Image (cartoon, rainbow, N blue to C red; front, side):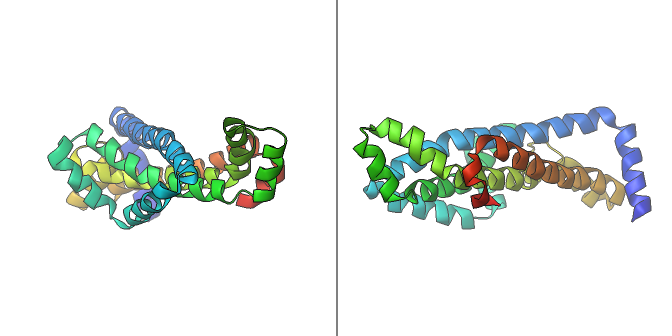
Length: 219
């Protein structure tokens, strides 16, 4: 095992340009999918929390979407968008939307009605209530959804290699095809390290973004 790890480091050193290109693609797939997913999911969560008629179908679709295998989503993209980076990004964005939407909806809906009534009694409008009361109180749960989506998509981005989307999954597929453990580990180990770094980094960011009094909600 240690020999394979050492050989994988040697492989990366000898193929730095290609490795950095695949690493960049992997990071682009992950970051873009989570950012786009956040921009779509959070407004949907707000709408669902405000319009009861839309809440059930949207949460139902999100829950069902969580059960669909990622490879199946990638497969569905083939006849629609073909192969490459764009369909991979589209599929990963769908995966990112689901946990962020569900967490956002639950977080907003869980706001204490007494706090909402008190804010309205002070003359707070709908927009102020959302921005100054509900979203700050829901921020621990929302942030947990963002962390879930990010760490999840770091792993799922390896599947983009199946449809030519690039990323470190290319090395994993190459290693599997050639039965070459060092090449496989050259893709798999960095993905695992990225997931760990993302978890720790977002944990630190959470302490900055989430109000101090609510930190325990996601600890």
